[in-house]
Length: 586
Image 1 (cartoon, rainbow, N blue to C red):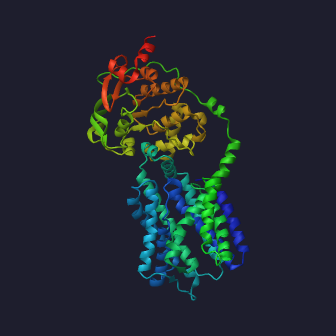
Image 2: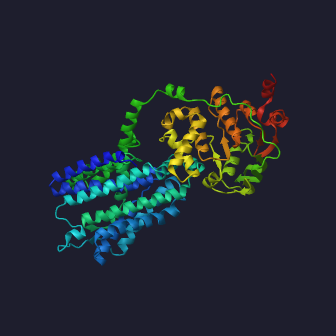
């Protein structure tokens, strides 16, 4: 990360420090400190939920454990907060690991509800233990050693140091392999797995780091207020504040929690001070209204709303992008088909899968020689995509075996298969929309190398191979369907695969666009990449593939050469139809 990226953070910290030095009122000074505390807490929430998309309603668990660790360390062992706050970070990180490992098995609202249970359980546990209210002892003989300053501006300056460290770390994560992996998981977890990302491992790392930061912030919060109660650190409002300031400012950005905290915390605190006696819970009302407002006006937060408007003003017209895209290999010459002596890249024997009473795949067997292009066709509902998911590890077969270059891969997870050299694209495109073409593709390159610079080089080569170098810096959300299809192909290529599984790569393309993509695929096969492709565009498939596997009702109907398959009466009846034969003969 360059120093230039930190300049806005330096500027903000400096301006805030000047403001804090000018404020002498102790109440407003405390408010300035709390803004920074909740901004740091929001950043910790953002590292997990903002970048992975897994909404946590339970971050108060880490925050509260950090607060109690620091308080109990000083009360019972007379340990200075200068040491206990780092210990609180360690406790928060360990709690993240303990909570994340079982909870990441859940998805969607089940994960969110499970996370909600942890701080509520801890609240009752700490009340049962007799810690209804802890007051940190005043150390008049050596206040600085225990972070007890008569001038409250010191707390604000310490909080600024903490915020700067957390923001700098978040910026580092955002621009690193760690951050790109998390963003890929957020935007499409299945595509991230297929690109070689071990999603469980990265999510565990995220919750550990997030929990550590939350624990550290909780420890500092206890020192600032000198009083810790279970509701004040484990309560619903604590988790809600982390979520709300981040949602309001902008999820998945470093500046989002800072913007949210700078606006919502002063408004909430002032209204609570002025109206709290007449309207108990006014802060909760403010946070609720903030969430409603964001959902209606700026669903992704203030930061992204402003950023998207500025980006649209500078956007290049779509026709410029289309014109810029090269179409290499459109004049690719004929390729030689693999001979009978070619080694087997993939071997499938007796693979079967049922969903209840539905037999999606039944006793399917075939071999794919190295360097071949195998086409899998069949009517809708024939079991083609289910077969791909079995080959790619997204679902486990009931029976049968799959081997890739002699190694048994049955039931192996997609990221492990990707590491073995199996790339995958999807029938429904799964781009990472808020990432550029280059960033999308570099995610696929991570599986091939531990070195980030080399990953970027692999990604640039893959982008060039499909002809997207001219739009490498464009966001995926700005691309046409053809460009998105080519980008997904490039992302699969960046991992240096030996075998590609292409699921309806030509879907949604016009005739000319389909020919361009077919030319790219033919060239890849000429570079000794083995390809298995599902496709409905029969005319394109006949020109492309070496061999056909025809499925019907989950079973193999025909297995043979293109010319023989297209004239087989069973294939004509089940899939092509008599009109297709008439058109082909004409």
